[in-house]
Amino acid sequence: MSDLIWSKLQALLDDGLNAVNSASDESVLTALQKKYLGKKGEIQAYMQHMKELSPAERPKLGALVNEARDRLEAKFAEAEVKLQNAKLMADLKLRREDLTLPGRMPVRGAEHILQKTQREIEDIFLSMGFEIAKGPQSEWDYFNFEALNFPADHPARDMQDTLMLENGSLLRTHTSPVQVRTMLNYEPPIRIIAPGTVYRRDDDVTHSPMFHQIEGLHIEKGLNLTHLRGILQLFAQSLFGKDTKIRLRPSFFPFTEPSVEVDIACIFCGQKGCRLCKGCGWIEILGAGMIDPNVLKAGHIDPEIWSGWAFGVGIERVAMLLHGITDIRLFFESDMRFLSQFTK
Ligand code: PHE
Image (cartoon, rainbow, N blue to C red; front, top):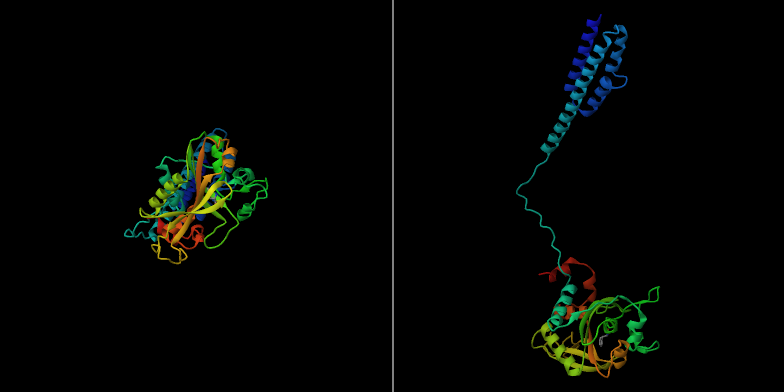
């Protein structure tokens, strides 16, 4: 009797191993796994024969069944790996690599033209011993207007009528608030430039509601308009070429006295008169002046001892002049055809 049982187990094992060997895909393999090793599978069913054996023979049968199960399980694992490899190889065979294709160059980032222009302007002033100062873009009315000698009802505010924030601050309309912030934080003599973003209610081909300025501020004993003129002359020559001429025209800003508008001799037509200088031979580049005593006082600096000058220049304006750009919006449209012209 028991011999028959042994040979049945051997036959079952052989069948199982053969079936697994010839399984052609994973679904067949899964079905076979269920058939042989499942809870209601053949190996489990085979255990019924236990009853037919004497108690002494039972452990032996148990050990043999376990061995058969182990061998089947190992076979299944092996078959699974084989099938997966075959699938991978078949997939690879379908692919064709073209080893002659050129490599792909990663796109190289570069400075934006405005950043580059800002850096060029900064470098000129850094070389003259100025330092860089910064101030917040959301600014208090006090620093943007009040401390700069614009009283609450001053009509000059209208020109810069601006964007208010819910907490009562505003988006600064110029970099001039950094003047008083710096005076309050440092002892004179002071020599700084303050680059940054500013906001106004302006929108046309030469004005953007968001643009950039660089403020210049110099406070020392005995400064006068000729010092301002000298520095601005050097600045214009460094930027636009060593033969560049400048001129100062009287103007008005509440925070400077006297105030001037600074022009450069037209770099496009050599002052013969063209569309860009509107026929007059001069192009306005910045506003400047001697710091009003009231502003020095707001900065806790004694105007009887110290004097100073300041200027504010638009970075977009400079970049437009340097590169002959006629529409300010091009700076902010992120069009690579435009921007990549300035990355060399
Ligand atoms: N803040 C002025 C403007 O934005 C420019 C300026 C700065 C004028 C400093 C004089 C002195 O128009």
